[in-house]
Figure (cartoon, rainbow, N blue to C red):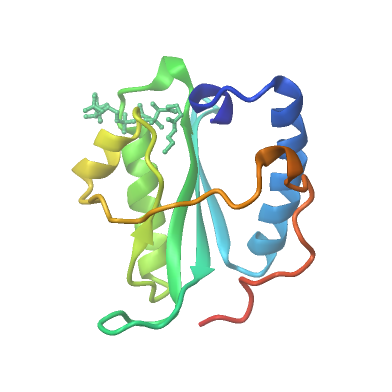
Length: 150
Ligand SMILES: CC(C)(COP(=O)(O)OP(=O)(O)OC[C@H]1O[C@@H](n2cnc3c(N)ncnc32)[C@H](O)[C@@H]1OP(=O)(O)O)[C@@H](O)C(=O)NCCC(=O)NCCS
């Protein structure tokens, strides 16, 4: 996915793979992360993941867990067949069945129409980079702040 939507050097992407794998495995084992894969003829054609992450309590929102949709990718020769849409719907069902009331994501240009069609809307989230990328550690912190939230 990152190869398709960003300009990171191959080395950065390769390093990120193993970091992401470790990060996802821990959360998968604790039931807070799931991946969905669509195969065509036994070959992976599309995939996507959902992560249950802690959020602060706020008025009008149930619970302190939100679902975050990530890692959406469809092989170029399989696009436009509804694979991504099916994965998003499966991820929504998975999260809803766990009592999660809201799902968010960051849309790429290619992904935006897929999500809009399924009812996702723009929010007013803002962002400020606090540490320049060259100073960011490649290994995730050992401190896990996404455990234990309901
Ligand atoms: C974004 C991405 C995951 C979409 O995957 P996809 O499997 O092609 O998505 P879908 O097929 O569900 O939807 C794509 C288009 O096909 C159309 N479509 C959906 N079901 C269809 C079907 N059964 N038959 C024909 N077309 C269909 C949709 O209307 C949609 O049209 P539009 O976006 O031009 O309006 C894919 O383009 C991709 O991997 N891009 C690179 C990585 C990326 O951007 N990831 C998303 C990060 S947020």
